[in-house]
Each structure stands twice: as C-alpha cells, then as structure tokens.
Image (cartoon, rainbow, N blue to C red; front, top):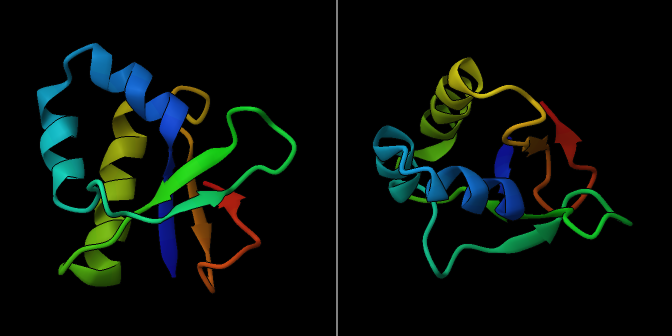
Length: 90
C-alpha cells in the first residue's frame, strides 16, 4: 500500500508551524519524493508519495497520526495499492 499527502494542504499546514507534523513528515517526504496526480481534474490535486526506510507500516502509522489531528478537508491523505494510480482519499 502506498500513501501520499496533498502538496497544497501540506504547505498550508506547515506554514502554521506545526513542529510535530514537520518532524513526522521529514521522515517520509523529501525533495526527491515522487509527485502524483491523486485527484485528476483539480488544480490542487497533486500529492507527494511517502517513501523512506520505514516502509508501509511507518507510512500507515504517520497517516493515522495525521488524521487524528487534522480533518479530511484540512490535510488530504491518499492511498493506492499500486502507487501508480487509483488514489483514494482516506
């Protein structure tokens, strides 16, 4: 399972200075992270795929922690079985 975070939402939340979120995402998102079109047809539908050494379990745990603090409309997180398409919002 692959996880991705919406770039527009991410920059908005990071601008608020959420230190804990920044530290969590620093583990799985960097400048070389792959970008995908998670919500086709929307101008803000681009997301960055979580990667890193932690693997799927770490990505799922980070997504769950983010979801506990931020609502679905505040910070969009997506999942995909293949990582190539069929992104679904969680």
